[in-house]
Image (cartoon, rainbow, N blue to C red; front, side):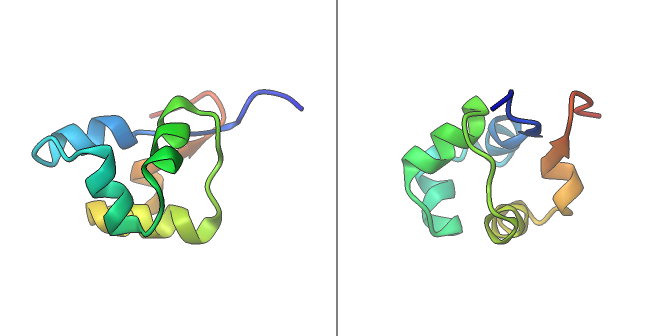
Length: 73
C-alpha cells in the first residue's frame, strides 16, 4: 500500500478557529481524539461521512478541508 493520498488542512483550521483542541474537534465530529491525530498526521483517510462531518464543524465545503493527491491548494 502506498502513501495516503487524501490530505487535509485540519490542524491549520483548528488554530484558525480559536485554537480548537483536537479533543474539541473530535467531540464535535463524533470521533476519538486519536482519530483526529491520525488524520492530521496523514496516517488515516476518513470515510466520506466523517469528512463531511468535519467540514461541517468548520462550516466549510469539503474541498476546503480535504484534498486529493499532492496538491493542497
